[in-house]
Image (cartoon, rainbow, N blue to C red; front, side, top):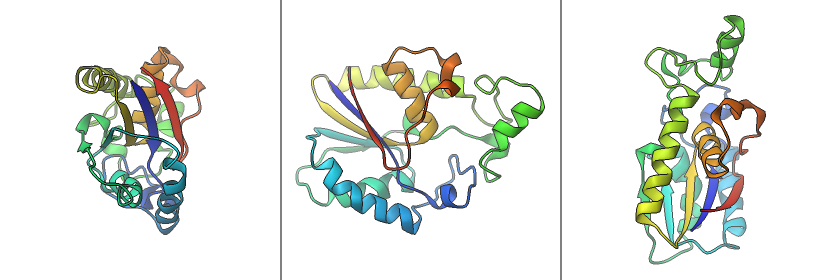
Length: 181
């Protein structure tokens, strides 16, 4: 199975440096241009299935490319949602990091009130890999998702420990990475 990870293009939340988490912001003007620019990048690959999170920014990222294709198999899957920032959602993008540093908390294991830890997202990524294995054997799958989920998924695919999460560089907006599963 070929797995392609694509982080959504720049969202309104990214642009305003808001922790948008599960807020349903769409793409910024720059993000819309990035989505158009992805068409030529993505045409270099052959995908059998497309999976996005249910949030607008992922769907708006992939839609310009999907409009160039026929006979699509596109699914949304809640396992691919961004980390729920809980009480930090809607605040500044560095809110959780700043809070953890100020209070000497482990950023991987810290779970905000009504939110998720990176470890929780990693557990979701593991479930998602099992879902892929059960349903898409020998297929080429493009997953258009969010920074924290995709980084956790990449770590699962590379068999890296979650404790090292902050030692690796996450996908940038509109960036794609390829893996074999």
